[in-house]
Image 1: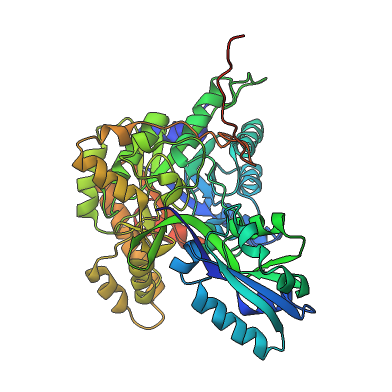
Image 2: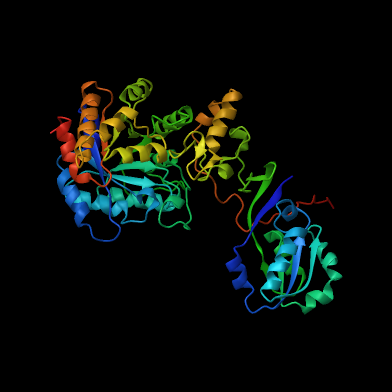
Length: 295
Length: 221
């Protein structure tokens, strides 16, 4: 069965994805609220997998909730916490329950999270996880054994267009596509002229690309990302613009900037869509989309 | 030369390990731990002083030449009496030395050090891990730099997204293995090796615990 998200990717429309984060615990009220807000507005929503190595309700459970609520989930899977057997098993379960979109990630190092003495697994890497999905679809697991029943996925991965040095990242990006990635959600991009340069290169590959848009919530937050998040580079003029917002209006300014960027990506047909990350502020995603003229 | 790299255990942990044990014999080693200044003569002298202040009695001490060598037993023989008097052996060598001594002498052992990795002194006073002895060597495809050891996540298909300015996401004093490999292969004009999609690693190359026997040639009768 072809997923609704895959249909959107191949339809030629400007695709919009966003994300929801499972809670620390079993209270799914807030997550359900975000799903309710977004499910009819975006083409699909990523469900994060122990983001920043912080133990949470599982992405598989979150994706199931999205599905049950009538949304289109993209299951994020990192290679940090599960070996190949556990990853394959979760993929079988996901497929069986109608979760057919997967974003394959390596995963942050364990030490950044809240279980600092846990073992980091990394039995597979992100490109090998994509390849594993393609192999499962052929009816065979990584041990070479036949599977009873079919699976089908729309598999994707990520790239950091502003990585430094860039070339090693691009080699990995090409390997992910070779492994079978159909879509790529990028790390946050802010300098769209730079991003156009990346797209000039990326267009040669048979893969759909969604530009990563992280909502800026304040000037200090932008500076923090520049200092601490690999491959994220908020230009000084955007930081200045955030700083110029009147007291209490920084978030509105961030929404305006995100909307403006998405509009430009769309109008100039830079890539196939956007992936909006409003980390912790999911409720404003509809406002960002409105600011981008997407509603 | 390849070395066993160690660091001293936290004082609190050592205090706990030595609780109720009043008489202590201390053993250091003249090889790796002397180089890393964790178990040579000066470190033993400091340890003796510290333990004496805590009311422990040091029945004796020695720096054996190579603790992990079987000859260590002979080196310890002449201290037999002093070792007998001790409640415990406090061993300021790497874990190989601790285990060798534990096998040879019927006494409880307490390691004073944590063994961090097998590595090499790459510049004066700096030690780097170079091989995790995984049993499935891929150096032939990476320009001789080991990502299994040098990449925090042991990735074999290129860098993760956490690398920044050629450094590792876990520590900006650590090089990103894949930046190093990229630079090396680029220099050798062999980036094609990095472009090859590597299959998942075999993590059972040598089933732990490692054991290997020299295959002696069988003679025809």
